[in-house]
Image (cartoon, rainbow, N blue to C red; front, top):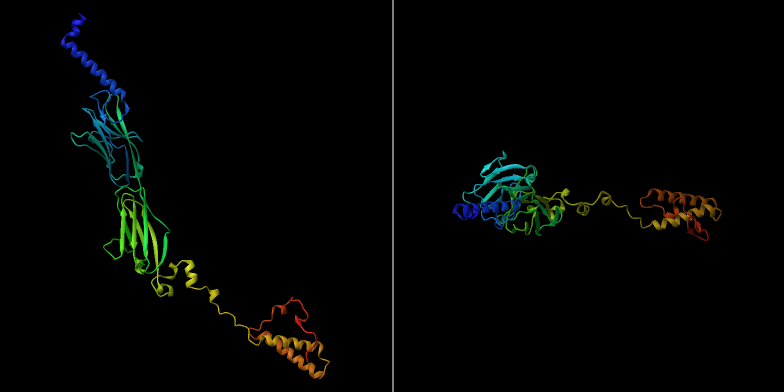
Length: 366
């Protein structure tokens, strides 16, 4: 009896349906949780994910999409969930969140379901989950990284060069997004009370070369035969990133003499010492000793010897008075005349060597 029931057409159809339902349920249970791509492994009619990129990096303020591909979806729904707070952002083509930057994108008949993130910020970085409403649910996780490109100029932040030389600046953008533009701007040096900025291009001043590698995020600026008009601030500005600036000082003959455009405070300290001598070095040097100075010292010594030992010689009182007047006259000359400073041996504390004040004499002079 059981055999005849099983061999009837209705019994066979019931048996086949039971086997398919068990197989599909087993396949969904096997793929519950995060599922990889590559097509179904057990159930030909069960949903499965297509191979799409799960690591997405973008620059701030540049819209980006997270794309999830699902085959054999049937009547099931695809939802996007933010893992940080488990907030449901979209389901199908309907957007649940009130944040207008998020939007569901889907073309009818397409297996791809995208989450658009407009004007992303660094705080939007994190894990997002593409979830399919099977029983049990299957999902795939996507990692969104929002970076802020920042420009860096190799070398110092200030450059000093002579007029006629070449200005060569290299700018490297960190966290660069491939294909993003890099612009250069020049702040004119004569804009003292107002800011006057112009974008640098090869169509402007002759002798300007601008080369940018958008994939590597590197830009080179070359200005040949620089003049004082090329001085000022040069800014490297990546798209949606932080810029950087370098100051260029062009020194020529006029700036060195003080009549040019470059003012003194723009010259570094080492150059200022060379171009503008300090007050100590600009003082008038003392006059050199008089050429007859070497004659006064022996005469003074002779007068002192005359007073101490020669007063009793020939001439008596007249000789003593003559020596006295000579000694006082020479002493006043040494003290008052400029450049007649006494030698070191005559200063207080000097030792007496070989007679009177270091002057070696064996007998008084007559």
